[in-house]
Amino acid sequence: MSDSKRPRPQPTPETQHYWDGTRDGEFRLQRCDDCAKAYFPPRPFCPACGGRQVSVFKASGKGRLYSYVIHHRPAPGFTPPYAIAVVELEEGPRLMSNIVECPQTPEALVLDMALEVVFEKLDEQISLPVFRPAQGAVA
Image (cartoon, rainbow, N blue to C red; front, side, top):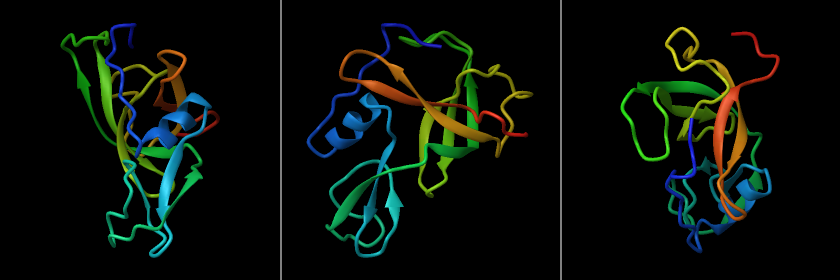
């Protein structure tokens, strides 16, 4: 799906815990200590209630395919066709990612299919979370 020309994210102080986690093979989310809502992307306050007391936790890495498009045009670092997907995590938040280890076709990319995170290492500091069909899952 990708090659060495793929754009690399630039961690910030607010997102460093997330990128440290992906580098270490963990998908980390934040949870508000006031309202208990888990959220993504990382930020220093809760998007639901505005609370500033938040905790970082290791998420399950499991989710479901919520939506996707199959992109057929070349883009730096990607070999078409490839899916741009919205994954709904088991903990509740949704995020955009890519689907790997699966044909990039409407027949294979079934909405609500079980997914699990895997990490695509770009360099020694950055690994990207991408998702594959869950091992042993029945579609």
